Image 1 (tube, rainbow, N blue to C red):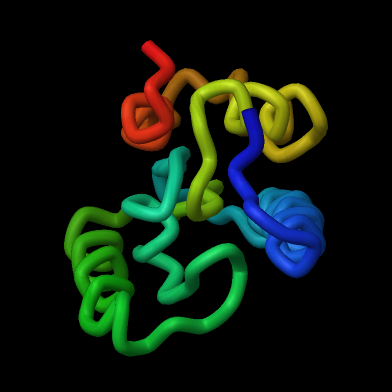
Image 2: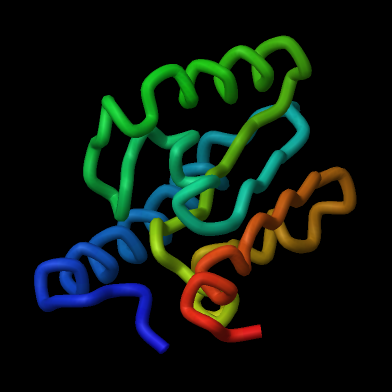
Length: 127
């Protein structure tokens, strides 16, 4: 099952996937002594970036990125958001198998992982 309905969304999905791969690589390069916090999922999780399928969406995500930023600063986390709107469980698994989560993070015993995925599986009738 697809997380997109047309060619434009298809292109946006691949652009978002590529951007998340780059973001994860950048995250590894600039990591400091902060504890990694990795948020993985669909549009609900992507809202922390202020985007929908990689495109800025101020109205739909207003105030949400600030919540993550404030929490990260107060708790000394270094957040990495790996999420694309419309994704289903199988799409997240694909993204993880194709480079979105660097091994230096996945093997970090101190990393905290939050996974929110499956809402779109239920919405499409897949259980």
